[in-house]
Amino acid sequence: MIVIPRPDGASCGLADHARVIAAEASRRGIPAHVCPWPQPWLPSPNTPVLLEFTPLAYSRVALPWRLLLRVLLRRLRGGRVVTYFHELPFTNGNTWKRQVAVLLQQFFCILFAGLSHQAVVNQQDGVRWLSWLRPQSPPLFLPSFSNVGESDHVSEPSDRPLQVVIFGSAGKRRHAHQLVAELGGYRQLFGPTVTVLDIGEPLALPSSLHEEVDILGLLPAEQVFAHLVQSRYGLFYSEPYQFSKSGVFAAYCASGVVPIISLRTHQHCDHFLSLSQITDSPDFLLRSDAVWVNCRSWYCQYSTKSCASEVIKAFNLSAVLA
Image (cartoon, rainbow, N blue to C red):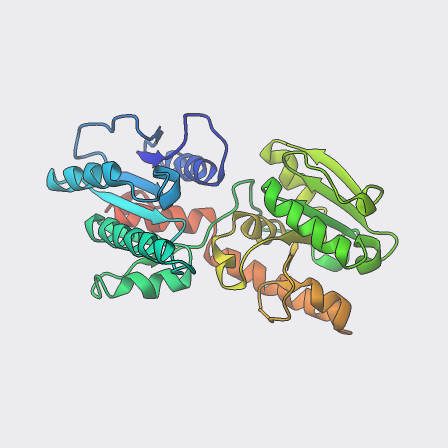
């Protein structure tokens, strides 16, 4: 059973992540279903539970004490709980109220990790942060995988049309478009023949980009993936050190799109480009090829199948891993 903080049938990063894992487990002959919180969990302690967790999703102040008590009760009854941390509170903020709140949130995350049979995080900082709690059983590092599909064989950037895709939540796409507009627009950055696709909940574009961007709106996962495998570049929003928790970044890696982080940063990373590199670097095309190779190698390690295998192992169900 996979617990998510959304109504049944909702679409969001955690819900989509849960449904993909459930489908992969079912493909391997392991019955799995998604259970929305606060719906009661199945009473049998023999039913393993994967908790898809980010603090704010379960509580307005990110202190989900009712959920913590439910996990504690389940462990006392001998049940197995694996907690997948999609978000961890790292910073203390600028005000004393924020500092106290984050300290309490961190304490709750530590309690969840301690009560769980296994903790899973999608950020390397999270591994270091929680490892001191159980040095003999540190958290697993499992970056986010693609919720819209993946392929073992995709074409290289040079074999794709000059097409840029912007996919993800409305707020993050809006941020990417605004930054590109401030830099002169997509045609200024990528050339006059570039095609730009915006996929997701409809939003208002900066006026200067109206003629440059094709708005496709919300699409089924299969159609999203079909557009991705035909695109050369993709913009995503993330802090540079948090890219491994981005489902959009994972979708780009899974489909062979070269990820470009939509931040004003000159920081170099083996797994994405920055918009600054497009304007400043003469070897932009060579860097694109190197990033593409690194991203494909990365995704081979952290695909849906790999993540599902590790979760199944954590529940001691290794007999059906084939």
